[in-house]
Structures are given as structure tokens and as C-alpha cells.
Length: 342
Ligand code: SF4
Image 1 (cartoon, helix red, strand yellow):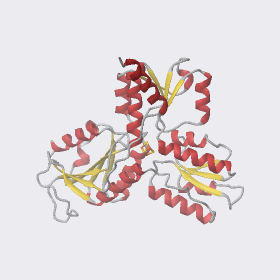
Image 2: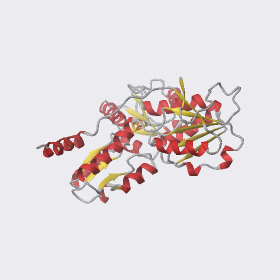
Image 3: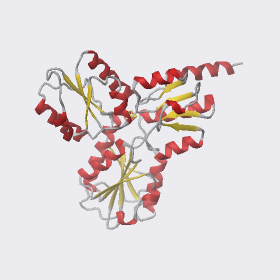
Image 4: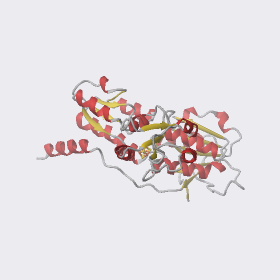
């Protein structure tokens, strides 16, 4: 773990386990905010707007963040629920959460130009689902019912996949052959709760196989890990993120499980209620994987105005992963650049 006193704010930044610290302070989690998949998805919409011009249609929220969506809307993106709402022949971008194969088919039927902004780490889970289904496995997909990512992954092999929505969903599972069962998961779950679900599944299905590599993505794991680290020191943890953001909601749960007295999810600094801070000396701050850092800066400013000016950034991992833009977009960008050459 690396501790860094955020230079602009810190006057007495120490992270000493909270034993002697009594002055008001903020522990700022790092990593926080944008992950590689969200960055790529947002950039995809921005570049498409520049290249093709507005409007650009986006099926579902490109990432689950109110602020990001309204900013892109202001620039000419139109968010729709289904392909039928997109005029024939238009460009449509599929969100970072992934889509079922039938959604590509519908787009083709409507002659839509589809650009797929699915996070490559979600695509990896789709590949696993297709591979295990081809080998005739029963696939237990651990995830939240109704979440877009789960709908997309389940759509890869509906006849082979059944959803297990947390530990309480284990008793409902039925399989054809207990020797040929594998579990996969949504990328943004609580690591601890998922392990509890798997442990319960294994008491019923001892030969249950695990995914070839972690399905819960690096960004989800890193953001939860640092919150776990700071939570025992915090009276309150503020998580910047939207209510429909699975990974952000999980961060609040991790903070509360980790010992914070209060944990709150907020889209904007203006939502912080004065009573949350009453009697608090240490406030933890983090943000979900779909949250731009300027929203966190506003939260820090809000806290500084209320005496929480000392900020220590607590770093448990460095993230350097980036993903390149979708092929179909890169191809068009290259062609456009070639046309402008003298
Ligand atoms: S949270 Fe993970 S899976 Fe989701 S977009 Fe980010 S990197 Fe990809």
C-alpha cells in the first residue's frame, strides 16, 4: 500500500490507523473512478460524434453514470433502450455492458451501422459462455437479475445458462449432470459475496468448475480492495456513483462491511447531507468505475469547506491497462484521415 498526501490540500496528512489522529481528514481511495473499459466506451461515443456528426444513437446508457450520459447527450448522443428506436441506416453504439447476439441481428435487419463498445473483459466472459455451452456444460452465471451485462452474457447460450443471484439463489439451482457444471460471473460483483455463493454452490456441487480466469474484473477488485483497506479507519465513506452502477453500489456495501459507520452513494457533491458528517473525523472518498474524477474533486472541495481539508490518498494498486477503440470505428477514423491527406 502506498500513501500519498494529496499536495494541494494536505496539511497534516498521516495515515496512522486512526489511533492518534483526531483532526478532520479525508482518506481518498486509489484506484477509483474510470476503468479501461469505461474510458474506451466514452471515447467511442466522443470519437463517433466527431467523425460522423450528431446525432449518434447509443443503445442503453453507454456506462452507468448520470453525469457522463447527460454530458454526452448535450453533445448530440441519443440514448435509446432498443434498436427499434434507431432510425434505419443510422449509427448505433452498443454500451460497455455487452449485448446478446440477437441484438446484433436486429441491428443488421434495420441496416444499422453498429459499433460495439462492449468492454473487452465482458467480451471475455461471453467467449467463456460460448465455449462451455459448445462443450455442453451447465453454466451457473452469478450475477444480478435484470442487469444489462447479465442479460447480454446469458443471451450467448440461453439453453445452458442459469442465473444465480447471490448466495440465496443457490437452492434453486438444478443441473443435468453434476460432473459437468461451471460457474461464471458478472464482472462487477462483490468479490466476497461471490466467493460465498461459490462456496455454497460447491457444497451442493462438489465438482463445480471455476472460470479459466477471474470474471470479476481487475477494476472492480482494485476499487473494492482499497475501500476495504480504508473503511476500518472511516466514520463515513462517500462513494461517487449512480444508483444503477453495480460496481458503485458494491463499494458502499464493502465500506459498511469493512467497518465504516456510514456509507453513502452520491452522484454529486450537492447530495451530501450535513448530518452524515456530524461527529465524523475521518471521511473516506472513492468513486465507481464509470465516474469522471472531476466529480470527486467537487466532493473534496465540498468537504474542505466543512473542515475536511486534509486529504491523504491511499493507494493499493497502480492501473495502467488501456483498451484500443472498437475496430469498426478505428477503420472509419483511418479512412477519414486518409481522405484529408493532401
Ligand atoms: S468495470 Fe471492469 S468489466 Fe466493467 S467496463 Fe470497467 S474494466 Fe470493463
